[in-house]
Length: 90
Image (cartoon, rainbow, N blue to C red; front, top):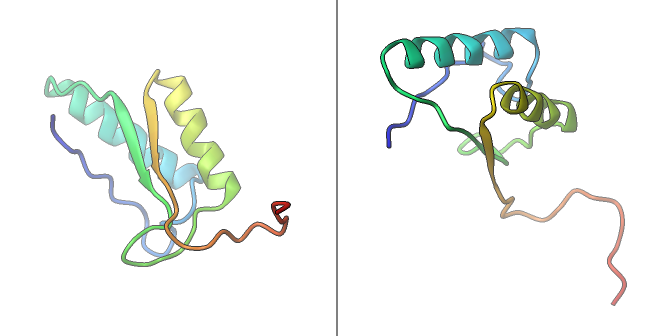
């Protein structure tokens, strides 16, 4: 197993916009050209050490990218309190 890093545009790490998709596409193409078969994308949410949470739109962007390329999406669970506004009945 080998990790392949993807550098995203500075200040835009929490987004999965066109620039980020292009960076992932490029990393995938370059890796596979060298014989490295990519099988998954791993997302750490909240992103450490920065500590921000990815938006729903960004996470959906990762899902679309993975679906397009038949990749697994591995997302780490958040270890800090949820920002959800609903309450679980006790």
